[in-house]
Length: 444
Image 1: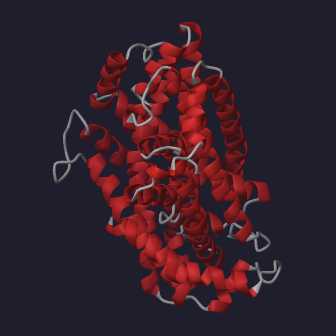
Image 2 (image 1 turned 60 degrees about the vertical axis):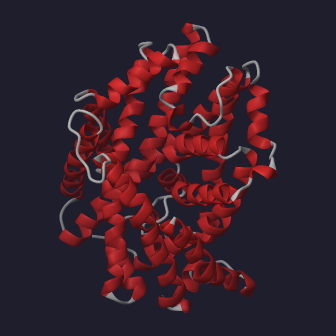
């Protein structure tokens, strides 16, 4: 059976950007920005996104398109040795675990979208805290919403690359931008919103500390989904005519744009009612519902809250699709089974992980070292498997993969010209700069 490819260049960009854009942009970015001083942090983050994100993404693109297969087999073909398949295996394993616990948070977004429509999450901060703790610690709602989200993801992945992933991305990504812009307009219309925009765009360089630099590095790395094999998997669906350099820059710019737009949506609303920008992870599910209730009349607040959580749900879905696809394509190509069967296996496995993660935070405490299973998997993937996989990928492309093969992918077989200094810059970044950055994340 011939390898399926994306049908259009815009489909490539939107689908791959969707794999990078997720809750990390709309939840983690505003939270981290608020905790690290605002505009100055954003400038450092953007620098890391360009000098780590672009070459790191290019490395996974090169491996994926050169291998033309699932990440396990692609790394063997790129590195010329079966031992390199370990990177692809780690990526597939990471994606499966991430999909398991990520769907729990995505399920909360789905639940809050309904609850906002019903007015259940609007009220004081104390009421919002009680509602969130009840959801997080419940034995039914949280697991059920997580399962619902995985089923929605399955329904898209099972339809294939063109009929499922690309088709859905062409609808979801433009819709995500439209919803962001609409919510920004609403937030910026509030009294005192200007203070939030100043926090976001007027840098105070005195706030740049080693901790801020490290947080910016981590945000740049995790926001682009390096080390999960998502990018490698999608690159196998690229045609030979796709310009990898241009595509990687476009995706990193889209990723940064969504993150900044999320800040333009959240900080004006928060500042308008006197909420501190460093509200932390509780910002989304506790602080913002009470902000909406305080900033708008009730008949408007429920609509704003519902649109906001619909946006979060959509952003989460664009990421879970790519995570699901990794395991699906590995099973299809390695076990020679149908996409329907492979997708169902991944769905069942991730559903089990998801339910256990949801229950581990309340009704059925489980985990090691005093943390829940949810936290255990989060730490294992983000602190170990993802940076380790990305580190090994950059080292393989920089040192083990034939230089001629790398340049062939960078230039799409000579279809696009790169100057000698551009090629030298790429190899310098991949061989020396990126490994140092990623090693700092791994050790940090």
